[in-house]
Length: 221
Image (cartoon, rainbow, N blue to C red; front, side, top):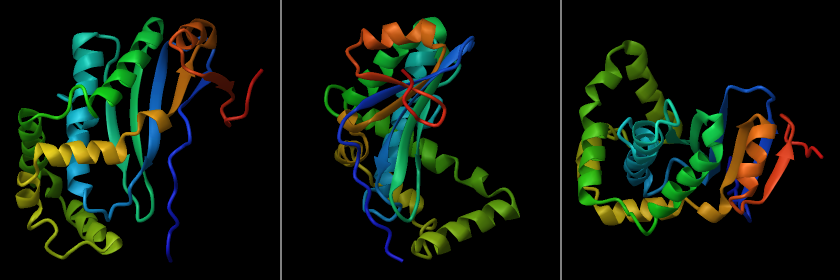
């Protein structure tokens, strides 16, 4: 079966879901990503490791380690035969919702131009992705999962045999291309869940077009 392509959103939106009395705000940004079988798949993994896929990633070091506004911020790519999904999210303290939103928006923009992934960033990502491989196959179920991955996505039989070598061959130029393929700031769909009475005004002051919706995504007046 041929799975049709899904286009990114035509414009950036920020939807607020009201949760009165919430002790924190959860900020999520998402955009459609390429299918698993694409030439930049490994580059996307490495790029995301730098951005939000590891403890030392930019999002986590910014919002947790530097600002102390979040217990943890991360990003990931949900892979599929058809279109995947890139998601960045962070639970943050309520009184820093606006500031955290701006920092996340900045990180997702600057990785494309003002602060691209450097050779040093790439080396850290390569080490993270390859040195952790032995721990991924500690059980029979984990090995079976990798085999299922190969069969399910139609990957080459030697996919994991050559994985470390292919990760090691990535360049900063590959990182730049992967970031441009996945992260599209003008098409991001933002969902912010928290106490509306405490966060809505701050979000609107950022210049974002904010709409309030219920848990099913339906507009709330």
